[in-house]
Amino acid sequence: MGRVKHQESGEAPEAEATPERSYHELVENVNAIARPLASRKLTRKLYKCIKKASKVKQIRRGVKEVQKFINKGEKGITVLAGDTLPIDVYCHIPIMCEDRSLPYVYIPSKTDLGAAAGSKRPTCVIMIKAHEDYQEAYDECLEEVEALPLPL
Image (cartoon, rainbow, N blue to C red; front, side, top):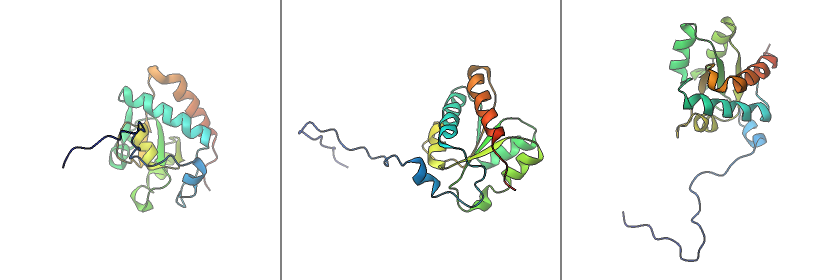
């Protein structure tokens, strides 16, 4: 509970955050149902689109909220985290998306998904809604997500 003393040697104190992990390290931790999995390039585009959407409050976060708005008929790209365990938490979301012809994609990390949405907490599901402020980025992501092959 005392004061934190700064280092006098001129070195910056080490960051407490976990070190960045590469895409391939993250892909090793994905679960069995994480198909279609976004490529590294598409994952980065989705993170940027999520950041832009969260600034204008055009995202839906969490299983309960995304499920509610899918049932209400809201349109958007559903992004699911591939490292969520147990899979029973969100295994019904892709089926709901397929029934309503909504595009969905898995990305490797729920921690990075939460961080892209501006949260310190991990998030396993996010729905990105279209908006004119980031329409070009959204359309590009939508086109690539729809081009991915659906699992059999």
